[in-house]
Length: 118
Image (cartoon, rainbow, N blue to C red; front, top):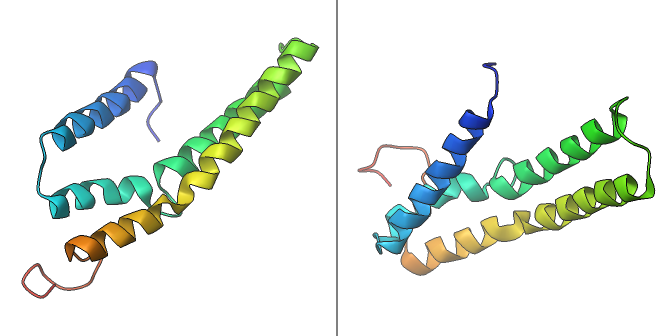
């Protein structure tokens, strides 16, 4: 795995900002849903991944030998874990995506077959 840097993470957030800007331009709903689908995947989408990231951060901070052992530090770690739980609860957004697909009559991009068969 390549080394992560603040720049690689900034690239990720810039890509999300680009997606937001694109969606503000009123693209075709089927195309918009296809772009959002990976972000709302039930198992690997942003809510789940970001929740896992916050939990990992809380663990890294808590287990660091250099971390100050204070009530304020414990509170901040608890806040990270609480935020992680709240984000993980958003994993159900993939159901909204399914309902939107039904509403607009588009099928998920993960279906088998070529574009002519779907």
